Image (cartoon, rainbow, N blue to C red):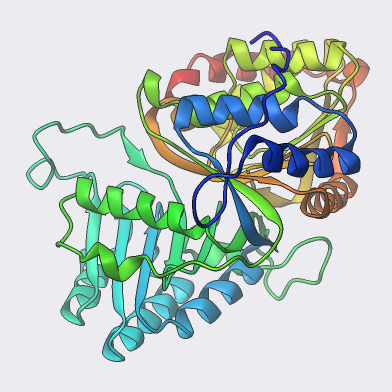
Length: 430
């Protein structure tokens, strides 16, 4: 994707009521530039997102970074525990383990208090969870929908096993949203960054965010659209959209994607953000099986002098994807991209921070399944303060990572090269 020069028009920014004037939008953009310096990622990339997804920048939000599973689970349980009206959750994996059972019990308790609780879980992601686990929730009054059931007898007429709901969304009372990469599983319950572990199991490294403000309504709309598409019980939408209040100064853009060429909005988001970067591109991704355009964009950015750093896993729960990703190291290193592998954790975070002002946290991996086969969601945040938090988190991960040096990588055994080559043949399945 070639860089497109700015036409001077600021992106549309949506407050609670109406749309800001171009003058007001320009003033907000200028304040951001005063923090980051001139960068086309602020305006051009946001405009691209708006063009392909229809999602506007929304002002007046407070976004809190949730580093790892313990922080995310604590925020989830606190938000759900204080729910007074509605709880909506959409997740890929909901396991029948300690974490899953605690959350299920909380859902049942809130339903007994009169709170309406609605759950969408993915059939493949939760394939090991027994049907009785979800039936217990239904018996207690929780509305539960299985996304694209594996059993073709339960599926719609257009049965497609490979189309999966990989989103992670929690919306409470229409005023608080939590989203990112964390599934409902006990594997996320360990801490990281060198803290002592109570169990010998390697911890999972992930990232979520908590959002308060007008942007929460976008997550609610996305959930309710998925609910209707999966033929969930009818819901009174008026009950799910309370009047919103501004909670902070963060600008937020919610980018959802769906399978098919026209729905690859998170792919466009990533490629365009890297293409418009002028200073730095700092990516963290657990499953890195990029196609040609993504590779070219990363290489071009590095060759132009942009500081491109990517944190990848040293160990993975998906070894085929791990080795398929390493197949691309040679050409990335040759162009000046700096690659790192995270030690002492199963990396599962999907984040980026660009030019010190643009950041995204979401469910999208940099692989074929996320870009072409999954329903995904990412949040873009424009904020110097939030980007600084993201950069600090990235720096801590770098300190726990090993850099892949070109001269050393070239000396790796031929057995490793063959494994990488063989794995990459399955790229379109990963």
